[in-house]
Image 1 (cartoon, rainbow, N blue to C red):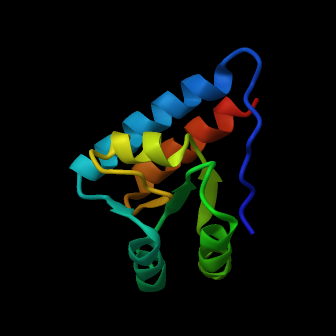
Image 2 (image 1 turned 90 degrees about the vertical axis):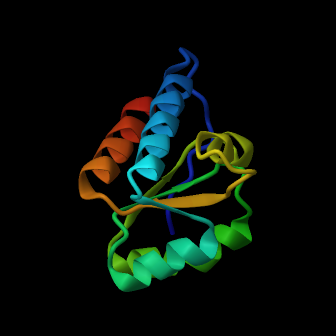
Length: 119
């Protein structure tokens, strides 16, 4: 099951990392390397094209539970960033609970930014 961090860093580090990640997700969308929503993420995972998944921190436990086993089987790393509203806004959409990145370089950059924000 992916670990979904919920604590904010007192120095604002997590908030800055979230902003970087949201920018990277917007770039991935413009590059055509992003899928949004549970079904799209599951489809990309099944096809083997998914490289990383970002859950909104306020995604329902049920949404995470439905996707996590597939991500584990496929070896896709995941983390959490922002809330559904912020995630959707970064993509020019309404609230979104989960997105997936298909480009390996962008996925790596997203995961590095998320990791840096948790230090």
